[in-house]
Image 1 (cartoon, helix red, strand yellow):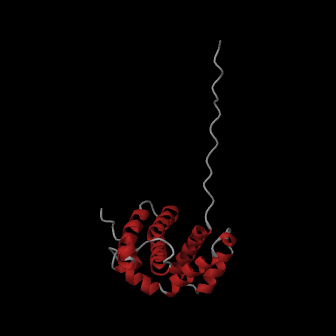
Image 2 (cartoon, helix red, strand yellow):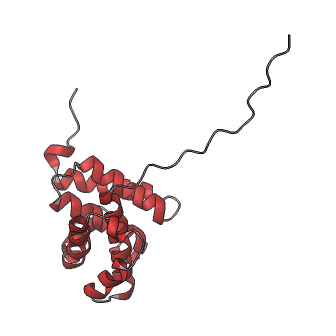
Image 3 (cartoon, one colour):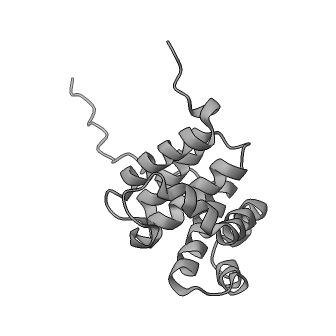
Length: 160
């Protein structure tokens, strides 16, 4: 008796899970903050450009508005938190990492419904997708320190 031939078909490639509306809003806000940091354009012009991008209709509009407009309006306050935890002036940061850090600090300060670990993880994912090779490691470390400052009760290590 001969054995049946082995199935040689390659397994179907896995599809990435669909992006959540919040993740889309963070990605679009990142692109808007990046544009604003580089160009200094008026927020309305930045927003108009971002609204024309593919996938905008699928984002969490309220979260996008908060991150983009809050990030621009509170840029000085966000940078004031960042300078306590970075090793250089904010002007010397990569614009992508600067925008990611602004989003992370904004969420830590104002989006208390988002657990700090989720904020950090989402920022790391943004840095991996849009930033330099090891930028996500820098973002992770900086936001970890920011979380300890901004949400000390939540970010305090568990005592075991």
